[in-house]
Image (cartoon, rainbow, N blue to C red; front, top):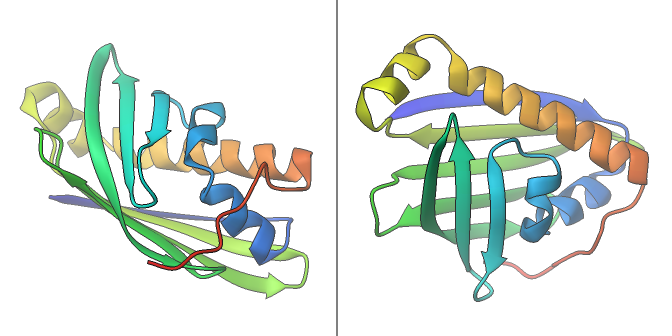
Length: 149
């Protein structure tokens, strides 16, 4: 597995940043390569991605939700092996640090080469910048899910 960690500060309260991150179906609006996400149960999501021309479908289980603190997941079944954790840390009442940590298993030579040359680091950094722009421009989350897992 290859670990990747990126952080960004967003100019919204921690609850707003967390609430938006629980709206998985909105990820295609700020995550490059994510075509769609379907929430199948409270803890199971189905993803369709297309990155560098390679389309993949996989399921991911939400393994940890702590309101205003973290969202964790792991892929289940299939060929894609990935786990992740997003943490939310209030900087002050109107700003939040969002840290995205992922472990993934590159599949094939192209993904292994991309991993070695920092493609996935840049991908995550870009996704976080787009998230920042998305949530700051809106000022409010598109919804929320405040349950715990």
